[in-house]
Image (cartoon, rainbow, N blue to C red; front, side, top):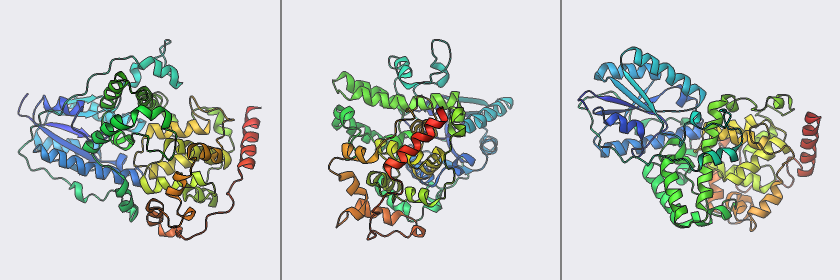
Length: 471
């Protein structure tokens, strides 16, 4: 350890505990934590940017509690790092790796440039349990199917989580934006206030959520997780997406619950590994984020215009299919959507409506506060049929029967559709408060009497198109 400062470059790792890059930086000297608002942040959707800003505010408070200031700058990452290195005399930069193609290209170029200048540039794994290149099939390739991937990793050793390190700051006045004044998502307008009622922000909230889930819900998780009207899930996704909690912390606490006899714990860990599998695929086949993973789907006759009246009706939760509309409104109010509902709205869009999965992927990327580039891409391609380990083309969810099965008493639908009850619950009314005024929606509107796509006709049309493709 020296007195020369060390830069810790923060990206999707908004926490102090189990943070390999931060811990490594503290062993070298006093730390300057740096956030860079570059093009990768500008390209995020509105709700993810809002959630990122809220996360930065919480993180800035956590660093202040340890006597450090969070330095926030806008600009190209390489230029910002170079400027701070020059101003501070720092000789090292640490960061936790990201795995999407753009981040990998940026980080590789920066690492090369820094090392050419004699700067220590070190990346770490703080975002995943397993590095994508470390998990291989018996033939040395990457896994394309989840179940064999799970079998390959379920018994692996995972390092124990790191404690919050002892932090030393620097006595330097550095220019910085204030986390409380960023306004990263001005287009959210009144929707931001609605989202704030449902989001839980920061690493402390993540730890509380995990503890409460393991104490009260994990035992019944496998049996109840698909029921839309049950509060059976961990809701940790918004924290994982920004690194407010580490997957290693969840992995070890999940297996600990399993050892104590919680019957749903293994299934919970399997869902964590599903996230790992998504990053495994994104790393080895980055085209999954922008193209059909199976190129034979390139000729499939999906509609590609995201601005048609039918697509807009789907976005607004006005399709006339109650469980679809409830899910789309839940998304707009909370920035999240139940996983079973994600499969239903995805199937309805890509199969009954015959619209391209990219339309759904882009809408989710704009609306989800738990947006994750790997999980979003894999999820949409899985339900559409064009991705790895995808649902067979003939698996077309019937949203009405699914609604009756997983929302037997209609509580989920009533919770989010104001037109179904009088008086309507606040959750349902919040949708109209959050919705853009340009949509001209009012809670006293009548609910659609007919669906925009008849389920039987939509299914038949999709099967005919799939059959023609496979003929």
